[in-house]
Image 1 (cartoon, one colour):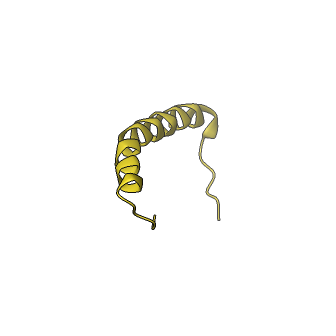
Image 2 (tube, rainbow, N blue to C red; image 1 turned 90 degrees about the horizontal axis):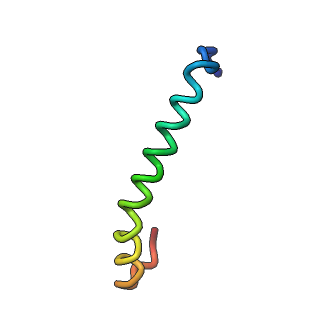
Image 3 (cartoon, rainbow, N blue to C red; image 1 turned 120 degrees about the vertical axis):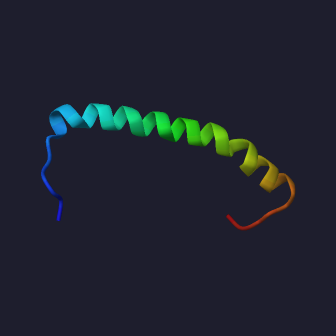
Length: 44
């Protein structure tokens, strides 16, 4: 199922991109999540 592709040179760049994307999304979504919790939204 897993297709082999050159993870040796692609993995570090992809991992860095994913980490940066995750951190930026987390920083962007945190105030939205906080306001959602403050307004009493129970569902996620």
